[in-house]
Picture 1 (tube, rainbow, N blue to C red):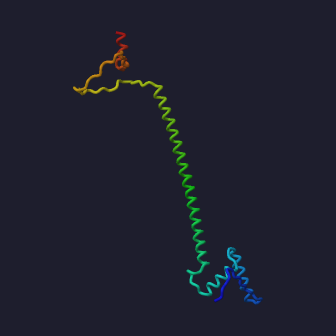
Picture 2: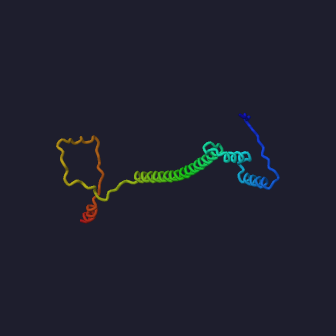
Length: 169
């Protein structure tokens, strides 16, 4: 059997005949359209096809298929990265909007707290009292405080209207 070295160079000769020249022109045209291929690649593909080698054994087709798969994977990775970027940008905008709303609500709450502490509460009518109080016989009344307590004076609107007539009377 013939032993080949690791790298074997074979030459192809094109004669100045019409058939060879037209074949050479087609080869040159084909290689111009596919700059990633060389004349050596083209010759190997032709030999594979001529010798009827099964598709599964052909190394050139596996690398082409692998290259196509890798290209699709790269495309998908770019698409996923683009989607992630758009998603994170959208979520970032939503988060900023929510933070602005929380800040506004905090400011409004602080403003309301200031208003409540600065203004005394004035009742225009006495708070409603229950009509019947339930008596709890077991409940003990708390001892009276040791210091005098002045309950807040509430003005009944009816008494305030009648008080002007009492002063005249």
